[in-house]
Length: 525
Image 1: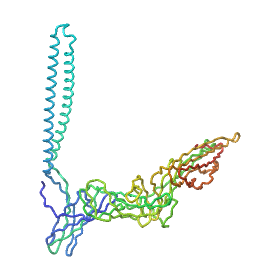
Image 2: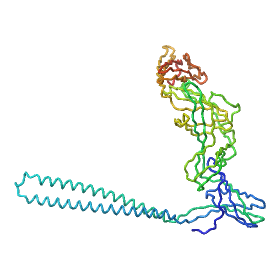
Image 3: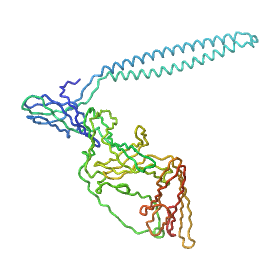
């Protein structure tokens, strides 16, 4: 083992996780002589970023003259308990292998005995005079018994051979484990050396702050829907935010104050230069001048929020929380072992009032989903991340699925789905009629839609049904919608209707639209 003098042990006090690293605060108590001296502080990971190291002594009459990271390669003897366990495992593997070899020898002896008896049977048959004892079945029964014994002996010998090969592999593996357990190991260790100047000898407390890779965190949420009923269109969302962290730095952080920051200390703080975006024009080709090609596209509605629900504030920050980093903190000291495995730390819980509605989009899915819409209260936003969803309270909580959540600013409405309602069945039928005018060539398309809803439960169910229709952006295409009893969103082309289904009840909804286009228009459908 490499000879060196170990310094004072340090203890972790606080850990701040970033997107791709962590900042650690440690403290150590040193016995320092009067004057100038170098002191060593142990417990630091070898992955420490030397440039981020900061040291701060506490106490009067103490001056910090310098700080540096010292790395060393230690040869560690094998742990005696591991070598002893590996030796015991090897002995057991050798004992089992010896027993298997003895069993295989017994099977071979049995097979040899059967072969000798078969030879004796054949010799005895040849000595029987021809025509004598032809009706005697004893020879046949003896032959059948010998064949059965030979088959059993062969199967036993094959099984013993297979077992011996397996146990030989196990013995070889045990031998390799013993060699590994008995070998010396090399391990990198790190320590921090600080140069102090003190007026009087005594104990000095030094605080170290540094950053290290191999540690990160991501936000995660658990949302529980409570106090829901078929009669009341409202409920409560209990939102618990977790910081899911990983660390494999080699340090065990026990009883530390954990913080989780959205700051990115490794990113450049200066915005990049914007390049020019050049636009060019060209003349239409002869084919493009003869006809108008219409393309159907699905347009995503881009809104800051949902376009429904009530905002609690008028001035909304951007998706990057207004450029101000956020810090989430654990409510109590936590243990963060260096295992590389994820662990969750709760950082806060809030309860929100939510509006509940069953939403059905028959064009996309023939089921109705329970949707909760709430407005985020408080000063902290909800960070984007995975969400676990559950329903129920008072010991009846059930996990209903997983989803994801985009960034939700404080005061912004958001929505979450809590699974389908199996009691509601939906069927959608579509019928198209197409023709064209004889002389002018004007195209006509009539599309009729029928939606059948049924309620299989014994409760009254309210369902919000949403459909969509095309919107024309050119004069050459004209769209007319016939939807009595539907609410229309002319800007985005949506139809909405709230349907109340009686227990075991059914209801049919119908609507249609017609499309008229000139002869030069090429339609996408």
